[in-house]
Image (cartoon, rainbow, N blue to C red):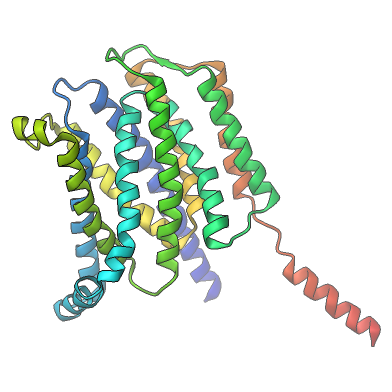
Length: 336
C-alpha cells in the first residue's frame, strides 16, 4: 500500500508542477501581449483586484466541496473566517506583499520582453532560499547552493545584453522593468515562505487559508486601485480597456495562484520556484513567434545555465541517517 500511495503522491506533485509551468508561461506571454498591443490600455490595478475576487470565489467553492455539506461548510466559515480575526490579520501580511508583487509583474512586463522577464524573475529562487533558511530553519545542501548561484549567473548573462523584440512598437524602459522585477522577487520570496510557514504550522484546510488570505487581498488591492488610479477610473470606468485577452490573463493569474497554494502545501516553496523556471523555454519560443524576439548569445547561455541549475537542484540529497545507523550497529557488533 505504501508504494502505491507514494506513486500517487509523486504523480500528483508532478501534475501540479507541470500545470503550473504551463500556466506561468501562458500568463507571461498573454500579459505581455495585453500590455504592448492593446489600443486602450487597461488599468492593471483593477485586473489584480478582480483576480483576488475570482480566487476567493474558487476557494469558497472548493471548501464547500471539501466539507461535503452545507452545515459543515457554514460552521467552517463561521469558525475559521468570521470568528478568527487574528488569523485574518496574520494572512493580511502575505496579501499585502502579493498585491505589490502582482502589480510589479504588470509594470515589468510593460517594459521587458516575456522571455527576459521569465529568466530574470527566477531571482526569486535565491531570495526564497534565503527566507527558507531564516524563517523555516531549513538547510540547503552544497549542491543546492551551487545551483542557486548558477541561476544568478544565468540571469546576469541574460541581463548583460538583453534580447530585443522587433514587433513591439510601444515605448519601454528596461531599467524600470528590472527595478520592478527586483521588488517582485523580494516580495515573492518573503510572502511565499511566510505563507508556507502558516500552512504547515497547523492542520487548517488549505482552502480556509486561501479564503482568509484572499479576503484581506481584496481589501488591500481595492484600496490600492483607487489610491493609484481612482481619478482615471471614475472618468473611464473600472473595466476600461478590457478585452477577451485581458480576461484570459486574469483567469490564468487566478488558476496560477491556486496551484501555487497547492504546490506550497504539498511540496516546498523553492521547488515551486524552480518548476516555474521551466517555463522559460516556452516563453522564449512564443516571444520569437509573437514579438519577434532576437535571441542573443548571452541570452542563450544564461537561459541554459538556469535550466542546468534546475536539474542540479532536483537531484536527490544523500540520506546519511541510515548509513550512520548501519555503521553504529556494526561497531557495536564488533565491540561485542
